[in-house]
Length: 137
Image (cartoon, rainbow, N blue to C red; front, side, top):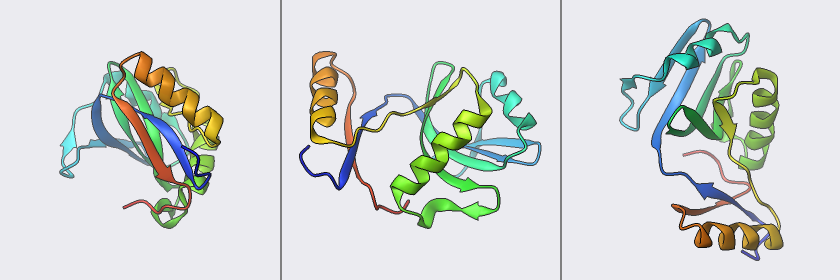
């Protein structure tokens, strides 16, 4: 909580998968690398001019996005987490949908502690700490 090299995010309890958008093709990919179904409302993402791969958790019809693996022609997995999250914010700001929800990151000790207390009181799934310079593996 006190280490500024780490950020905190709420751990979501949903269906984990990636959303890959290339051209007008949209694919959901599970942890095993297999193509899986996704809610039909996601089809609107095919209209985006941007290619991307998002990592997140589907809860109902909301996809809680917590990482960006690919943007345009760039594999972002080798970039520090903090850079990926900044690019993710910009991307999601340009797409503007109700079903893509950016997972909020908490950076300082006070906000991380407040998040921890809130999640504990609400008996949520948990909290995740990620090193800000971590690469995606």
